[in-house]
Length: 196
Image (cartoon, rainbow, N blue to C red):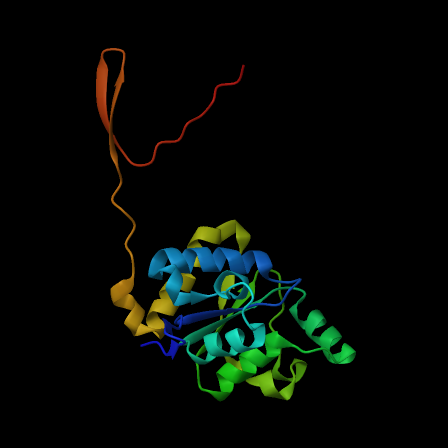
């Protein structure tokens, strides 16, 4: 399923985001996908690249061995892209998407709530096809549900991950005695401190 890079299996899922626009969502997506499929199956630059590693090379290797790229798009994504183009600075975010599109790696955009969907004309030619990809949405008010939708989409796009999907552990049972009454409680326990 995964390519081998210096003896290490390459992650199946590559998380693409723009600094200044999607760091928080990238962390949430990484944590949820890692819980579902294992951290070794998810690539997020600062979580996956070892200290002192050659950053561009590690980025290229991680991308070229993946089976799907998640492109996280927030409200500042287009503006930051244009600023990089005007400044003439390297745009790794664009490069990752363009590389995935060129290699026919499925690209799943994740559009944050309140973000306008870009038209092909809004994007540089090498990533214009991103605007034609079916996306999933993310709304912080529905965080759990939307993250679970992303997990399901990844499982559908990468069938090899289905067998590795980790089901949540069964709810724990607690025997609680209050006064003369005794009850079996099934589920998580939340501790609430009473106000003084």
